[in-house]
Length: 116
Image (cartoon, rainbow, N blue to C red; front, top):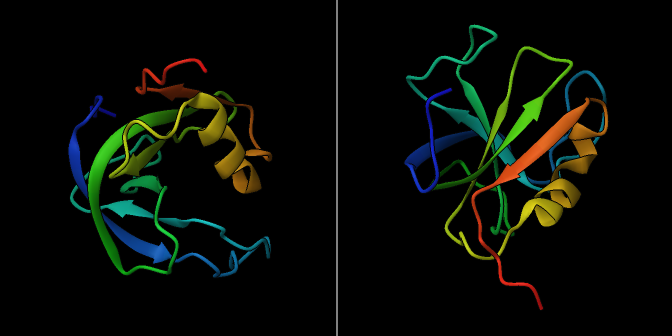
């Protein structure tokens, strides 16, 4: 995976917010899709979570705000948003827990969110 902080990307949403996972049955509380023309470690296109949008989408343009490294899977995930300063590692972890709870994941946030 060769994306870094603030890389501009387009995500094609194939699992919109509110849709159900085809095999495991959980609901997607965020939009989830892939970056066309890319190649992930699993031989498919790179997957991405889209944060900060609150309706189902077909596609999305934003910037990479983080990476989720899966230690027990051969595929890492990008985290994309238009709101780079809103989501630190804790927020990303909480918003992606619906799926990442099944993996040994580590979140890397590119946000330098100020401590309150």
